[in-house]
Image (cartoon, rainbow, N blue to C red; front, side):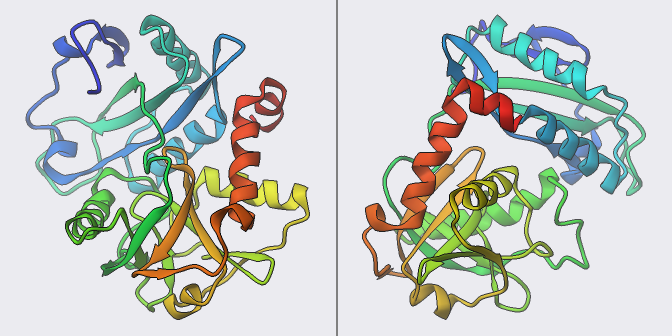
Length: 295
């Protein structure tokens, strides 16, 4: 699904076939989930692969590594160039890109002593699909921000996401919605959350969420479009009474939600602010001039 015998990745400073790449079985990331990753999208703009906000993604990767003590001896401008080379070598234009920084062998519970970089890419449609989602409030909460660096995109954090997502799917839902330790709405397993009420949008504030780059882009779109958006705490009961809701993230893009816990929202999706933003976001990332402006 993600690679074949001809797929090329950038790994440990070289372009190699994914099928031939080898990692160390004693890597700290493998044993403890101690690594950092990013997710970028490339779009086909006039027959050319164009990454959306690559600087922001690699800056966050550097921040995440520094926040949890993983060495980051990489130059981001060079990494962007290597990413484009990976796309070219695999003849990819519309693609998802996964850079990952892993730590070398270390069985101690200490900060990383060395790190390796992987950049891989593959064709991947909208992560949450192209139909409206039916979502379940998860019994799993987002990690306590006093226990983790929650605004760092750390590999081990996503065990929490896997648990929440899988339970929702086992129960017949498309996705989960997690609360924070104070039972306020936080985010999805891999995407930020917005709700609409009385012509305004609301999204949880930073603190217990990963402040997504797509989330920031949505807020920018709202400001440009004259749409009121507030970052504030709100409860599940408030979401039940709202007019509409959506997830957003690099992999998910803007994904509309039909229902939460089998309670349908008041407005048809096509009449919501989320639908407007979904169209504006798609236009933004597929227009060459706009990509350049926002990059």
